[in-house]
Image (cartoon, rainbow, N blue to C red):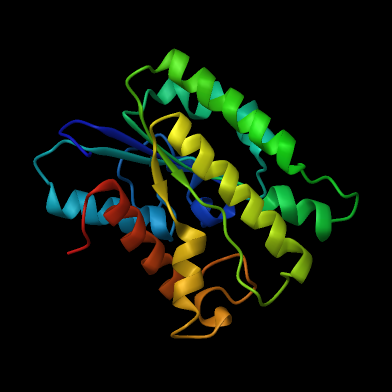
Length: 218
């Protein structure tokens, strides 16, 4: 799926953001601008194995974003970058902001689906050849995550799977991946607060992202 000269853009919330350097966000392949999580790990693997390919990797995730926030910055942070490969991980804040934040400002699942679809339609209209990579949002049962979150995140995963099929996108099964991972180590090993992955969690995400798009970890 990854070809020479591709512009690869990682989009999402804090899990993608992961402390990226805003000052360097316009610099392709800058290790600080790629954050310190799965986006950096996946990009570093591609760049290390394909040094002559001329790849350009960017991270424009923003901590706290819901799908409506991502859609609001679609032109500046997606379309204007003209990516060949667009990876999106969004959805946990749409639940978290409803259950655990003052003011209950989450995004209900039906609206999440509607806005997500509208966003993808707009991206495809502007960038008809873009290859989409849609990632399951996820939570692990520990930290801030309560039982009420689980079913709603499962519904959001179903929405993402439906959209991946509808838009002929690659589906990255992060929730399914973590569901398997907790069989070998407790949830907090992979994400102490149930939302933000540990180093091990990010490595597992990078490996799953790469295998899903057809590029294996060295």
